[in-house]
Image (cartoon, rainbow over all chains, first blue to last red):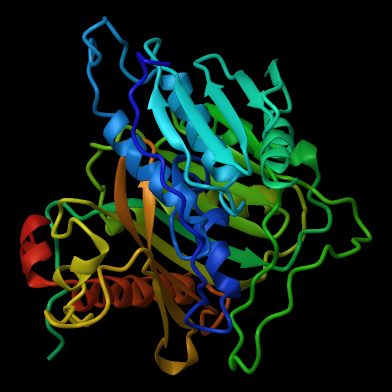
Length: 166
Length: 270
């Protein structure tokens, strides 16, 4: 972990936000139905997006600019597969209320999200090959490690649900 | 006299979609997608399956929030939407039982916008091909009930703004924050507006919200302008007159809503 680039660890509540118009049925249509790219290449950061996603995206902007040897130990820049997976993960969890995670770049160009809440810790590494590795640390110090190679969306929701609920 | 239509050398448009919705073709089956592909395969060598779009009609009056879309029980089995993509995947045709759409989009990010006249011509050509196909296959008459034109623009951070508190530099109708004011720079900021098109031709919907763009790994403002409505008659001339009107409204609205400072960045010519 000491070779990872730490980029933030604050905890912010999700803001309350109401759409400007009561009738916004056309909104999601313009965003994702007619468009062939919007749903896969962008993360919506408007008011109904959890604040941790906004902050994680800002950190990701910084990570994306790092070049080879960014950590003086030969660290690789963000890998394309890890980038794609991170975008998808942020989209999957976009409306989930979670603490703001630390977003770190690993030496192999993977992305790690690290949450702390209710005495628990959750670290999820988003790899270049469409898989994830995770570590759960319970308030009593028990450690559980694992990886997931399929059905990643459900696995991530299971993990973040564990973090949120006592 | 109507002023000339504004033109930009480097508009921030990332995707443009032209489309029509028509009464469902009950006899259109999955096999017809393949048959239609044989006619356009040279130009569109790739295909993808997508979920169908729900029918959308622009109401003449908006009185209350629309109920959420619910699945409709079809007497005929539901059919997916098929994409036919060109080699570079920058242009695609989308077909389903009641929709025909054609998209242009940036894939690498540096593709020049081909201009409305070229894209409208290509849409017209593809639509004509589809109508010929439905006629040849005796799929019934295609009755257009809605037209749609959408422009998706991305205004990147650094192009006139660097934080959400500076959006008045891009959209002059937003007032700058007062120096002694209470509120800091906003954490989230979005806006929506809708306007009636003339002569009951539908509406122009505009929405702005911040996004994170994976391709550039940058924050950006998404500015989406969608015109939707029905042509005066279901004839090719009237349909394309509707697209011309909508295009003019989208371009003028885009220019009116954005500041001269960002127009300069996008190389405004007229």
